[in-house]
Length: 362
Image (cartoon, rainbow, N blue to C red; front, side):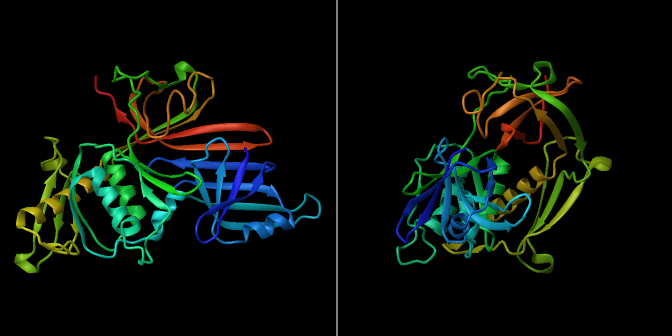
């Protein structure tokens, strides 16, 4: 794997070095949060001095838009085996984690625009004199996705907030590096499951010999189907709402309740007082997001085997929905949420990670 090292000179990034002799490189890209990397390389004084500098960026020759930011350098000296550096850090998406949402921010509209709005008011659309503005960061063209959201957030980390929204609604985001700037994009993967007819399907199954040893766990230990959320106010005047799942069995013996204290959600927003209907919409939206996180989970893991049947980047990509069938005939769909690439002395290996299954109901 050929890597390029860039340094920020105060105005722009300049390419300053090439690494093509690393002993191993681990490169992890994620659909709904920041990725990470690790480089293991024989140490030299030049490399040590290079990676102890500030404001570095690392890109790949084959995927130049995927950028990593070094955060940690470890030097080990060994008279017998040699001296090595371990350089690690997070992907460019971690830049969003450098910001909080300091003011009461209320939004109602499409999910895509909501995410772009949160990024804009905290990183991009600020006056040039504002220290929080990143001049090298711009938006991509919007896709116009239709799903809607009503949300209020204050004092939360920007990266965590956007990641949680993406998980709830099935979106992903990325910061692509162009060599001159970063482009922020909210996007959806392609449905390549057996349920659709427009795209070529992708299926991982022992039958196709592209999954090895597997494990399957169905877990409802943290399951709730009713959320009661309490907002502003005191005593009998406190605003309290209850949201249930759509399942008919959410009653009597099969009712699982959860309480959320959301006193920090205020009707006194930055742009004016919220109506009772607007406040209720924000509260119930937060409760629905919590219900989404509290569903029973199906964990599936398996060793993905490179049989040549499907090629990442051509047949499927990060964020795509694929079909999975295990050896007991349990089938479902899952999103490719992570791609781990490892290149070392034994060769190159790519491993996808899948989200929780959604079981098929035929």
